[in-house]
Image (cartoon, rainbow, N blue to C red):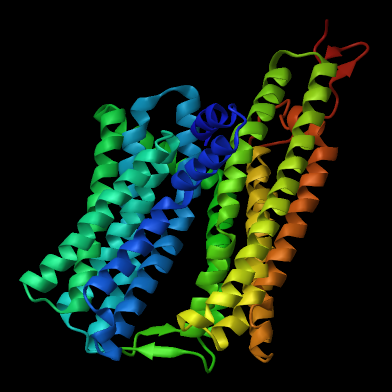
Amino acid sequence: MAGIGVNLKKIYSKHTIVASLGGAGYSTVITIAPMIMVILAIVVMQKLLDFTKVGYAERALYSSTILYIFIFALLTAAPFNAVLSRYVADIFFRESYGDILPCYYFGMVINIVFSTVFAIPFCIREHLVGDVEIPYVFAGYCGYTALILVFYSMLYMSACKDYKKISFFFFVGMTVAVLLSLVFVKIFHAEVTFGMLLALDVGFLLIASLEQSLIRSYFREDREIYGEIYHEVGTYFKRYWQLVITNFLYILGLYLHNFVFWTTELRMVVAKSFVSAEAYDMATYLAMLTNISSTTIFISGVEMHFHERYKRYSEAIIGGRGMDIKNAERRVFRQLADELMNLVRMQFIISVVTFFLGIIFLPRMGLGGLVTQIYPCLAGGYFILFVMYAEIIFLYYFNDWNGAMVTAFCFAAITLSVSIFATRLSPQWYGIGLVAGALAGWSMAYFRLRTMEKNMYTQVFCRGTIMKRGHGARPTDKVYGRRAGISGKRG
């Protein structure tokens, strides 16, 4: 993320209202613009192609397909991307850039293979049990695979600090998708839902291709080290297994409460394969949008302030005096607390304003009733959740892998158990599972950060071992004798 801070500092250095608005706009573009562009593309296609005139069964099948593509593309990619991100960061640190492409191809293969293990049986059931036509099933499968490639390649582009190009590629891909949907439906007379889904497939594939071409232009290819890199990446999964669990549990926790309500009377089954709860899922989507600006606020703060403080602390450890190290440590944790408090204050104001606007305008947009009853509690849950994730990032900074893993586990476990209980409550409390889970995760992460602050010297200077670990007989406890000298040898 270090590339964002440089541009933000240049923008904010002018100290004007226009500069502040420009900085907020810039940070928004490079963080949440891809998601907004996908949403806009889907909405524009629906408007241009009279989606509301399509039969209810076809519309439900299309909506369920898009929902499953996004949810399970994130879930199946989650176990790998955190470890691969760590490996890429280490490559940048040691400047062995020839290792990037072997890692990229290796990660791509395991992502695709692992994802298809779950996708292919579902697609077979969709056709045989749900009587969905093979072309439509295949289009959904292609969209799922292409989106996995998009998310995976974004990992490497983020490491290259090319956030603006990520947004540009999404703009190009979604523009092409909108145009192709018109071509497929108006010229080739395809069904509206099939034409829209096929156009999105092409758009996602175009984005993935552009990302891959840019990555290949950045790094040279060294085929002589492929086998060595494959083995090294494999050892990273063994060494940083906590990252695999943490990232998967966090992404899983985002949707666990949805999965619980998919089993209640709110459930809607489409083609005997897709299960969802339309009212609860819509409320979840709105609550997430209410708090999505926290990503922008957090990245801006970390890039402009905390990252620099942490860098100075690291430099003090390498060659500074004890007093310099202690002062740098205090500044780091003071800045960490300031960033969390600023995030809470700013996001609270934005969420409250957005919440009241939603309560006023959502019923006028046809989203009243059950959706507006569920929405408030979920909005509060996502507010706490995004603050919790900021704490997990800070735990990553201090290499507290176990703390991050326990935080994610508490979040997922509490969210699941309380959501099951919430199904017996009134709709106003349906989202209490997410609130409880996020609060439990936040509390655990806060406890770990406070412990880290109190034991920072131990964390930094006492993690090594004097003797190399190995198997065999334990060495003798005696290391020095007055007559024999060191280790029993006569002087």
